[in-house]
Amino acid sequence: MSSQTKQFNIHEDWTVVILGFLIIGISLFIFLPQVPVFSWSSTSDLFTNVFDSKNLIILFIQFVYLISIGTLGAFLIGKSVKYFLFTFPIVYILTLIALILAGNSAIKSINLEAVIFSLLIGLIIGNFFKLPEWLRSALSTEVFVKIGLVLLGTSVIFSDILKAGSLGLIQALVVVLSVWYFAFWLCRKLKVDDELTMMISSAVSICGVSAAIATSGAIKGDSKKLSYVISIVLVTAIPMMIFMPIIAKYFNFPEEVTGAWLGGSIDTSGAVVASGTLVGETALKISTIVKFSQNVLLGLAAFAISVYWTYTHNKSAEVVESKPTLKVIWERFPKFVIGFILASLLFSFFITSEVRDSVKDSLKNLQGIWFALAFTSIGLETNFKDLLSNNSRKPLYAFLIAQLFNVIVTLIIAYLLFGK
Image (cartoon, rainbow, N blue to C red; front, side, top):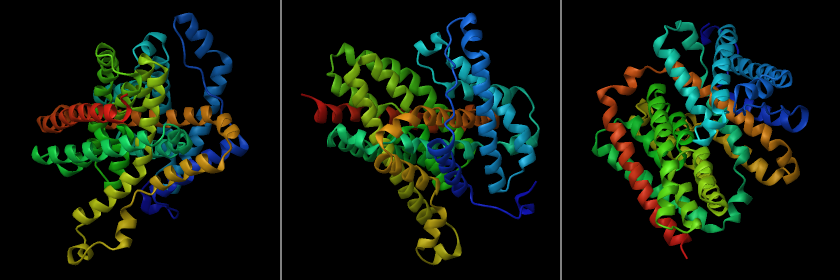
């Protein structure tokens, strides 16, 4: 079972780049997976739509597709293929339950995303049932989420961002830099440990969950700390996406300003879209563009963070005696970011809009299912005691204060750039 017994082994980050582009290549040239139906409003709808024989076939094909990709990943990385084949069906079934719950019309009306249910289901099972160690060790959380991040690059289209003009890019840059530095300074003042400091700073300032994961990959962070930050991001995104549109309407903010405010402040893309929809079409468009602009900075931020972390935390003799070499920096650089950037460049400049439109729904569905699988796995790995311990209070305070700073600064910048 040990990776040492495997004769073939590729670095995890390179593996997810290979798998991500394998999925993209299959979608473009060989087989485009259909998008399953999860929408329902009553018990009869549930059986008519979700549990319809045609939809069940689509789900089965999706399962075979995903487990094939995942098995290849386990083999390339050097993990136990046998234990992965035992574990993946469990994670997939739990994730399907989350997707079905999120597909209910009442749940949709309050804009709760599937990943929230994935995380909750994983947490409940992982904390109230004793899971065998082989199952926990076989979970491929980082592989799942990094594949999702590579596929996320296919939706970051530079032409869409430029349609909003330079204002969205300017706001994204100013907000990310100012909020990241403030969060970093605040975490240091509160004596939050270095790994959580980096994850919190990135999560608040860039794009929430994706930024926290990318940062964790860049610094080789602890998975429990990553789970903690993700939990905070998801929980705080819910009240923000509900109350910020209400505040904007109460004070009669222009839709352009409101959209820029929502896109720059709310941490998850799904919550941004949901809140923008509550305000209007213009707000939805501007909020999405601003959020995409911040997503573009994800790769650059991960690179900068990996370089900073290498210079300040690498304890090897080579670094103690001198500055880290380019080799050391390259070794620590999160290679999956290259996949994200290449996917974005491919779909921005080398794929026609017609082809892009024909595959975007399927790729978005695949991106979403990989993320949902990752959140189920995170929940299964996480212990409530770690999330609710006294040591968790300072990071929580730091996140909430930094988020408040983010909301205020982003509103000011949105008014300066988009106010008439």
